[in-house]
Image (cartoon, rainbow, N blue to C red; front, side, top):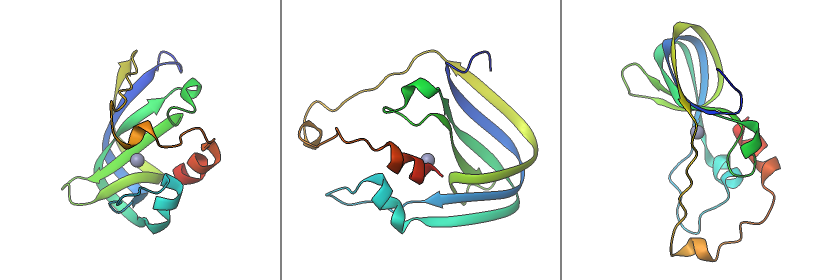
Length: 131
Ligand SMILES: [Zn+2]
């Protein structure tokens, strides 16, 4: 990486000795906070599996709008299973980075977003959810 201050799209095709991933079921209105939604998550463990990781590396200074660090999802080589990566041990593979010098956030122009309370500090929740 030429700088820790840029965004990166990440892809890794490889062989993994271990992957722990989760999937959260589809949610219904009124939507719960992510920290509450993940209480019904399914956790999958894969051993000696081939597949692809995709995701983003987000710089530290966007904390509050996004989650800093790596956010990776895994899908098996046959595209039959996967999820949000919680833990990983990689044997070998090939990685690609796309350096991204722009961050675009589009907000709804109507609907529930106009009135939902978003001012609370969810940093502690986010750290619990991401680990
Ligand atoms: Zn995810």
